[in-house]
Length: 302
Image (cartoon, rainbow, N blue to C red; front, side, top):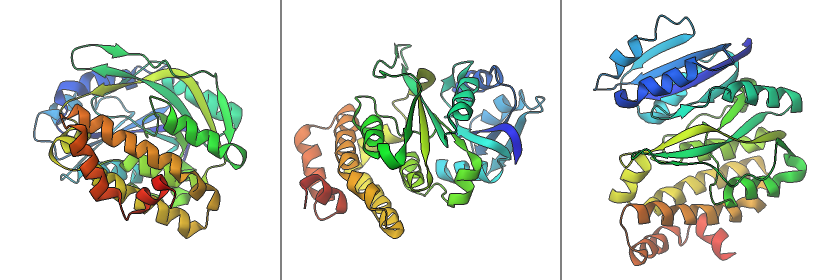
């Protein structure tokens, strides 16, 4: 493992229109001791051509593979990561110049396992929604004492934050946990982060919105919301997490799951409404997909 090196993973699939801005925002970081691992997951557009312009930078590691989905690309990136720290960037997003310098300093100064920053929403029409929900500066949480506060902060805020790209992790923590990204249609990052809580002692939160999250109408979650039942996928994801906590016998985390269950419920409404579904149709899906499942039991208090 390379000391003080940050491994930055970008899974790429048909993102040629966004890659220049994404990659340049990384290569222009004030912290330059990183390796950028770009995994081209079988793109059929000219993403490879765009990426080729940056291969002269010795920090860029380029991997091509047959299409395996975002999960397959993320896992490939993790297997090829050599840095002491690891993080991820969406192929259509971009980051602020001092993101990694600030996050690494916070991680080291607090002896935390994970650093979490805020993010801004950027829309296709050029609008930006700067995060306005943070109230504290460099808030450190010891999960043995602050677990409920962690769940409230990550789940209950109007702009919940359970994403992998807003976090800087100690690579050793992830590799020792044995956790990888599971092949599920959506929410692989949420499942990853909440499973990792079993192995984390301390987290530091930064108030700055360093990450710019691009809102595409053609993104996976928007597409699924239009075509299929989000509640079904969230219920299945919740089952996997419950089973993981039970396997470790972690009662403290199991007690926090009602908070996450209500957050999943909120997400179903948010994305389904964006896709044009009416509330009656959304409720029918929830009734069908949540009842009899652990997520439904946590919501109803059974």
